[in-house]
Image (cartoon, rainbow, N blue to C red; front, side, top):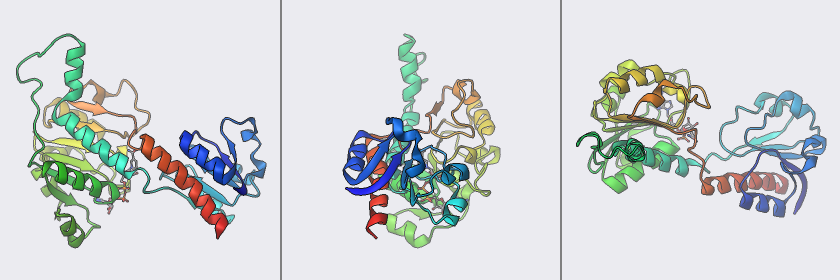
Length: 305
Ligand code: NAD
């Protein structure tokens, strides 16, 4: 065990906690000592806010190990100015997010949630075609963003359903797409027009905010589905609501929303052809173990160097 005082402020998986206790001198979130963090030399955080004020209360801090990807709860500039290392676990949850995309895609294509609600209400089949879905086999998926998650989604849908994979990502190359057997498109509109499934996996930037709005939705095939597991503001939710209401799309599923947690009165939740999940992409046992153990490993690596 490395004698580095490590405060784990947010709950992590029990296996990862056991691993942390084997490797490090741990004070975890269940311990009364957690509030007396002045002697912290390392911290593992999920949502805990590492503001300037909090960092100032930890004069011996050497490393902030983020359990997950997003670093928005850390004052990065201030941490850097103090010589504190900041790490994250960028690979740990990508497979889980990609699997959620597949799950939401199948769920939308076969109207699983709507069917469940019909069964639950004791209605049986309302009309012969109300629950009719479509097969993914040999169809086309359009990936908006070909990073870690987009690539996995494309590979899985190609392998499982022989889907043609179109890509819109101005920062990827023809060669990368060819290696995967994907087709790179120069224009977003070409991907939107041709795809039966559109899956969005981009960061939220000035360029991607409202990337999919009324104009883009109107270009999509009315028998297509839209999946977004990236960041809520990439899709214009009002425009998506209008498109779903007017049956301009077959369906849509969002794991992320402009404002989270999503309100139970959100207009999208009134659409039968819509599925919402509460930013649940990384929430698997496997991803939680990986995020926890990789955070511990970052601290161990720092101390061994
Ligand atoms: P990544 O950085 O590996 O890939 C993002 C890709 O988007 C890159 O290839 C980049 O070139 C591309 N891109 C950037 N701007 C673009 C634009 N204007 N148009 C098209 N493509 C563009 O990221 P990733 O690990 O694949 O993650 C993708 C998104 O998923 C991120 O927003 C991340 O925050 C989110 N995410 C969500 C969850 C969840 O729980 N739902 C979990 C992890 C990540």
